[in-house]
Amino acid sequence: MDRTAFDRDLDRAEVPYRVVDRLAGEEVSLAREDFEDLCRIHLYDWLEQVARSQWWDYRRDAYRHLAARLGGVAQESYDEVFAAEAK
Image (cartoon, helix red, strand yellow):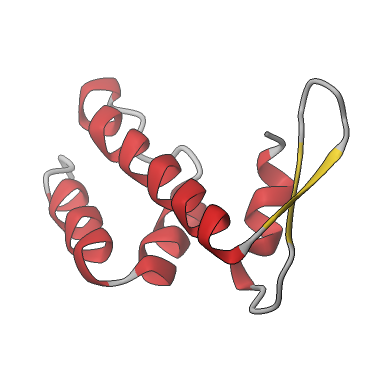
């Protein structure tokens, strides 16, 4: 997916959510539940990789925003992973 379009919809409250297929360039509409699932997958995939890759600043604002949008365990996981960042 095109991450710019995805990031833009993080603040949307109304459905449908729209992401852009980065290969076909076509817009895909998603129901709230599907968009939330996509947010979880996207965030948790990165949280699993970030310490290993040491690419802490890659889309950091977007991932912080994802964690805040999802709240609860997602926010706690984000905070835990990024607390390990070497300063």
